Amino acid sequence: HVQLVESGGGSVQAGGSLRLSCAVSGYTYSSYCMGWFRQAPGKEREGVAAIAAGGRSTYYADSVKGRFTISQDNAKNTLSLQMNSLKPEDTGMYYCAADPVVVTLGWICGRKPWDSYKYRGQGTQVTVS
Image (cartoon, rainbow, N blue to C red; front, side):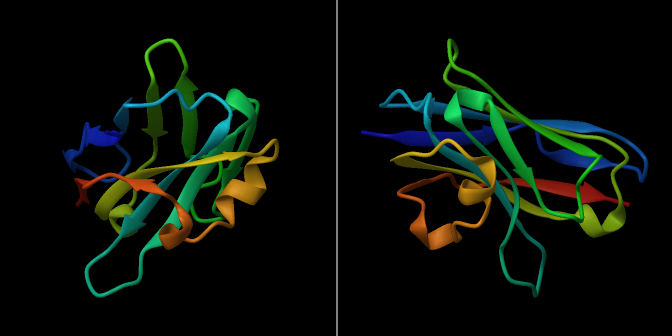
């Protein structure tokens, strides 16, 4: 049974930082697509960052480029999202997702819609004021 469990959300002032984690259990994902999505109230869910090829290739949405860093720890089966210089518009529920397709380019994972990811977490709330 595959499970993705997010943690690390919270409330922070603008300019602050948070680190989100996604614990993956039930399968080894090292070469698969992994991604972070977010959904703000009243808005559609959007892809924020993605990673492929065992962490060698990443993708970022323009809105977070230079501020967020996605990474994965294959030994711990954990996906992380370091978020710096947070802005109020970063507020939302953040979700991690995984899809067991072997992809070498992060942008391919980044273009995958939420519904195409086979495994999806329940989310963690991030509030920036």
